[in-house]
Length: 127
Image (cartoon, rainbow, N blue to C red; front, side, top):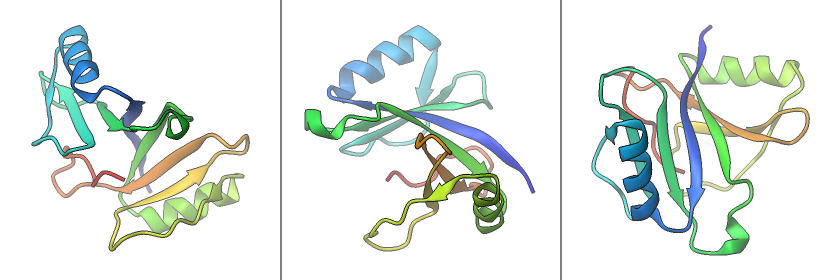
């Protein structure tokens, strides 16, 4: 089994402003075409942890402001292993097929376990 940090996801109120700032600050480029409420940036130099932005239009939707996306080559096995270590799976109603599982660590901090993208670089689907 392999588990690695694929992305840090930051919830924001102004998507364009945050993307412009962090792109310039860390020399990041867009991973793929932006969606209405989601942009993922990657290091210009190639492989590395992505910084993704999740637009939340309501101030009540902001907490938590960030979470980790963990990439797994076998998501189901990693979810079971993490539960055995004290994490909990957070059930959600999804609209269709998803490639991630929402979880919480023993203190309730949320993170996603995502299917490892086929190319090992591209971002899993936005949540």
